Structures are given as C-alpha cells and as structure tokens.
Amino acid sequence: DPLLREEYFRLEQDMEKYTAALQLTDEWAQEQERLEREWEESIAPANQEALRKVRRHMPVNVRNLSEAALVSQPTPNGKFLPKSIAKKFKRTNCLQLLRIDPEDILRMHPSTLENTRVTGLTLTERRAIYVHLKDIGSRWKATIQSDKLTERKWNWFNMMKANFKEHVDAWQRHVDQYGPPGDHPYAPNNNLERGGCPLIG
Image (cartoon, rainbow, N blue to C red; front, side, top):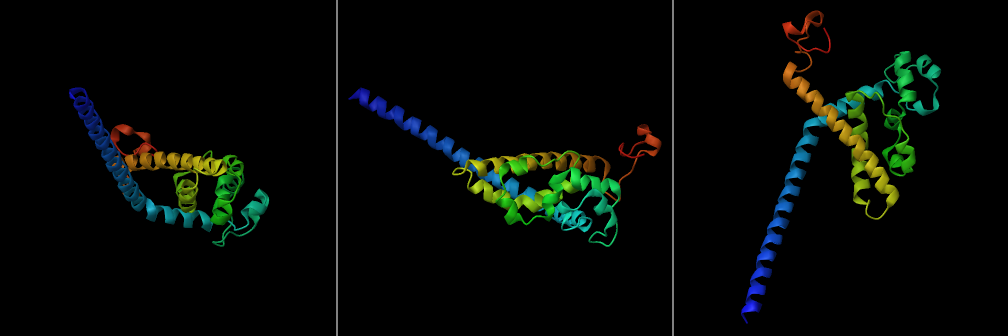
C-alpha cells in the first residue's frame, strides 16, 4: 500500500530526527558536566584558603555572642575583632553558617536559609560559604523531585552559587586585565591615563 509506505517513511524520518536531538542533548549535558568539573577544580584551592581565612577570625559560638562580646573576646587566631567585622558577622548572618555543621544545615527549614542576609559579602566570604555548602547542595539537588521543602533549599543554594559565579567571573576578568594579586599595578593617584587598576590608586 503506497500510503502505508509513505506513512512508514515519515515515521522513520521523525524517529531519526528525535534520536539525533536526544543524542545532541546527551552530548550537551556531558559537555556541561565537564565544564562544571573543570570550574570546580580551578576554584577549589582559593575556596579552601578563603574558608580558613574567615574561620580564623570567627568564634565557633558566633551565633550566641553579641557584637560587644565579639570584639572583647579573642578569636581562634588569638586576636580581637574590629567592630566592623563583628558587626558584619552578626548582621550579614549567612556567614554564621560557616560555624554550623553541614549535617545540621541539611535539615534546616528552607525559610531559615531564605531569611539569611547576604548583602555586602566579599568574594572571599562567598568562596568560604560556597565550599562549606557545596556537598549538601548536591544532596539537596538529588531529592528535589520528591520534596518541595528540599526544592526550596536547592533553589536557595543555586541562587547563592549563581551569584558566587558572577563574582568569580568578574574577579577573573579583572585579574586578566590588570594582573594577579602581588603583581597588580594600580593607577597612581587615580590617574587612569597612566594605566593600572582603577580600584585603588
């Protein structure tokens, strides 16, 4: 039957088209996974160093201390916090997650995470928070299909990660243009015509 043969041919073409699209999607997904792994590897040393730097100044019981107590008690490195840092630890309270066991963060209600304040975080602080939360972020992602609360926590983490990536990219562009820390020329007296980084001069 010519009509049946024509219909069969059309269906076969459609199947080839859908198969090609599926293969393309798989290849795209694999490429994204590779790029993600490379990105993680490239930032891992700086992230671990950032975590050490922030924790060195942050008491383990930071959540239970007032700003006044923070400036009057020695930090883990034996020194005392400036008032500006103590204020930041209390007011930009997402930093306090760095002194909470990840297993406890894993079980937190999503509203607790969503209500943490993130305004004014430096790149170093964002690095520290990201590396502290990275593993539990993966665990949230694995169960978002079966739990709406977990989905909210994953969305919060994903937002934090996206903002972190934006700051890393901006930093990298700056370093590519002006050079790495330690070999970073600044524009003298803010005279940009003489070259150098415009941020300090």
